[in-house]
Length: 323
Image (tube, rainbow, N blue to C red; front, side):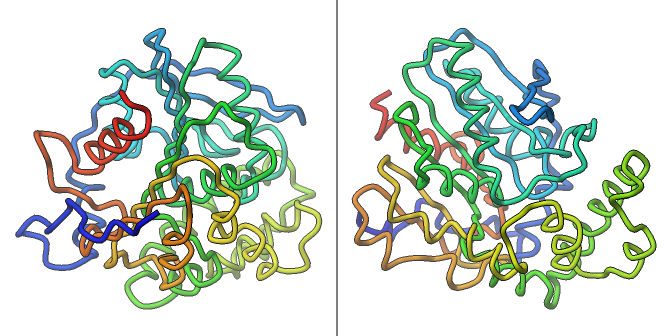
């Protein structure tokens, strides 16, 4: 599909002077909508569980939302999206990755970038619970990787009509290196702090699986993932192989439904390989939109009283689903 060269996100609010202000301000300034989700505890085939947050309207259309790294259904952009589409004739389902809801999952393993089979189980479960003519996958940041990887995989069925992703690190290795440099270290340290707390909680249940003495010496997210995620997943010799396997840019060629990718050019967490212009320009289904501004999910400017990204999702759905 043609690259979307002129994004409707033309400029950022005047009081934001750089990409970091755009990225962080919404986290601190956005009002909590206090969305009334209905929580369902869903048991996976391997005996573990994840939590699903629903907004049900007995609708014929369903949006399944994948959150970011260490995120959850309370993230401001997820609440904004869920609230809007639930009020516009959609059912909404936000699925939490293993260990990302309030209660840690029951197995010793954490979530990882390759958990598309978990997403597949969620989709199959959701389809069985409702009469949905149209199912849409929506992903933010890490969740965008899940969506693209799933849509480009062999397990993706014909129930999914389209996908939309924002701020997606499509090259995991490069994005990881960028996260460890400069101002990005602030974000990395935040992730490390959250993840270490989870590991400590896991260690209280599985003391034989987690070395807390080693945990104290780790100061990079990449080393945390290598030590505590890859160690519980077979088939990868090192983190480079893991990143290579699950970087979503390689799944684009196999996608067979309409997809919109929105990555801001000034996103401080994305590397140059997260903007696959050549691959998308030749693709039959994938649209790539790269606004000059926006930061990492910092598309704060409002359009018709709603956040720009909410309206952009709506515009794409109207075009592709003929709503």
